[in-house]
Every structure is written in C-alpha cells, then in structure tokens.
Length: 114
Length: 114
Image (cartoon, rainbow over all chains, first blue to last red; front, top):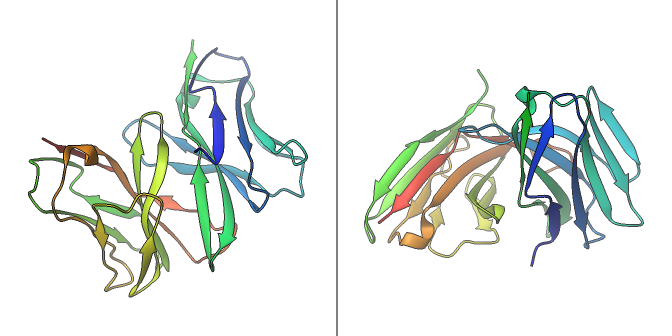
C-alpha cells in the first residue's frame, strides 16, 4: 500500500510549458515534504522541500503547492526546459520511533521536448 | 568533493553467490541508508543506520544484511542473492536525524541476479 501516491508516472511537456506532478498522502504524521530529481545514471538529488505550515514554496522555476486539508502537494515546473527531463520523486517524512522515516512516491518520468 | 560513493556500479551474478556492495561517504554524516529502486515501485528503504553499530530494518529488509563498523562505510550484503533482488540500489547519507536534513545519494549500483 503506497503511503505516498504520485501521478502521473510519465509526462511529456513541450519546451516552455508547465509541468505538473501531483502527490497525495494519508498519514497526518508526515511533517516534511521534499522533492528529489534524478537524472539518468545518477542518484536522486534534493530539488526543493516544504513544511506543512506553508502553502507554497518557490525556488526559481520550481514551485511546490501544498494543501494540508486535502493532504495533497504538487510540483510545478514553469517554462520547462529539455534539461529538466528527469525522474521526479515526491517524498514525505515523519519522525517515528526516534528516527526520520522518509517514504517516496513511485516517481514521474518527465520528458521535455523541444 | 563531498560525495557518496558506491562500488561496484554494475554487477551481474548468479543465484546464491554472496556479494557485497560497498558504500562510503566523506561528509562525516551520522545517518546512512540503503534503498532499492524498481519500476512502478519507486525507492524503497532496505536498511538504515543512525550511527556506528546502530542499524535497523527498513521496509524491505528480507534477503539483505548491513553493518556499520565505521562512520563512513555502510556495506550492503546479499548472502544468497535471488533473481527478485535484481534492482538498482542506492546508498544515501544525511548529517543527522532531523526532519529537514537533506539525503545525499550515491550514483547507484545496478545488480542483475541470474
């Protein structure tokens, strides 16, 4: 049972368009929501993250929107570029049993076409 | 350069032949973790370690062992590999066990068990 549901699994966007990836969760104990970006042949790397007391966080062309009541959060990539083509993982973490447990979504493979 | 290294990067082996995947970090991080990445399943945690000599199971520990004798190293051991352990494996580390501590991932080890 997926604790963090991510969609879509794959996404094709034209250069200059907006890429949107959605995630949903059930566990209200989650208290931190990072997004990781993974290029082919590389390990994931932290892209941007948000805490649940904030509804939006923006870093350059990347924005996280967070809806605590709906238990949903999403990543928006504005003016998408071919260099953004990668797999994106949403994640949620909680402190449980004395350690921080991070649960990842299944990933979204984004392809930005020229 | 601050990094997490894994070796080997690629490995093809046969069922039952014991193998070890090494992981090392040079950032003096306390927390280390192993994940496996499978299509449609995302990243799933295998084992984690909060510090030297402190390890615990993640979500999918069956068939794996780990040890943490030194702070920098966290090897993953498959004592009797099976084909269902064919996967892409990532080691990750973070400074400490805190909510918003970024995890740094290694480049991955692609394992095929025949």
